[in-house]
Image 1 (spheres, one colour):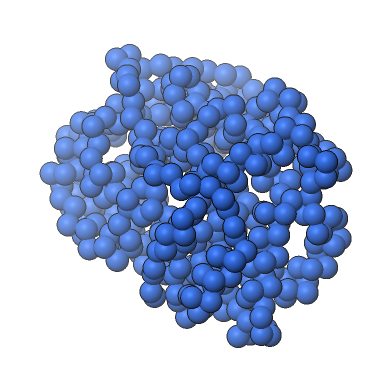
Image 2 (cartoon, one colour):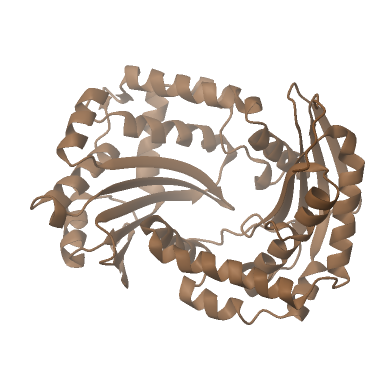
Length: 426
């Protein structure tokens, strides 16, 4: 595998030459400093852009061309990455080695047609495409309570710090959606193209210079590339008293979400120490939380801990009966105190390292995962998998103990359901 980064003036161009896969995978990221008022319009924009283009004005025409290009696939997603909002557009298609000559160029140009030549007339997006995508997005926003796991997590973050970026709803807001018109969406599109920081990642068994030439001739963005700042969030305030919030909902299972803020975490600790601690504490079936809360006491349907380095938080999620709320919280706090006291074995540490290393090794089996690893290097200064494997092996017990003192319980949120009595033990 050979990686090279080119400065193309208006954007960064990343090529990962790799002969392991039959497909070529391309990801184009547009990112800008986050603004809460722009989350909704960017979500709508990504859907409208992939729904049609000026050349392919209907879904039928798009489908025909996709079949001609051996079922090329494309997708888009928006996500909050700390201080930045990222719109990511992706395409996957068969290498021309397995199809016919010129298919790489044809596939790239088709993908860029969707992004750079939108279905616009008289300064506004096509109304049919716009209306369909807007209705779909409205349905997704209004149905959030049906997705209780997602809803409870968002509500916990909102209660954690309403003034912080962590409280922003990645789905967007209905009030903002109602204000968007085909005209205003096109104006925002031009703003994104003109002023976002852009990174293009390409992976596959390719002629790097040939692909670079295709993009330089086709992806002509007339903007000045701007330096990127840190994605990482820091917390201005650490709560002295834990905040507890309960909300009732018509569902059969209660959702418990607990948020911890982290303070003064160094880069090495983010990448290596916190993942090990999190896995031992609640990252898998051998974790302290799973064994104590799930297996020994049968208090939950599921329980897990996760760490978000960019948001600088650790969270615990569990599905419980509301009557077991106090006992579950008590056991979670007890297990955390045990971790503070160092009550875990060297075997626990080695098992966590092995799990983490195996996950890193699997990255090379997926084009998407490889691109994501280079994205993390570009945006977050993360080491690449081989380097991470070397460093994760060296994490010490003393380093784990040191970081536990920087983890602060902040918010306990319970989405309280009707809780039909069930035996949650197996």
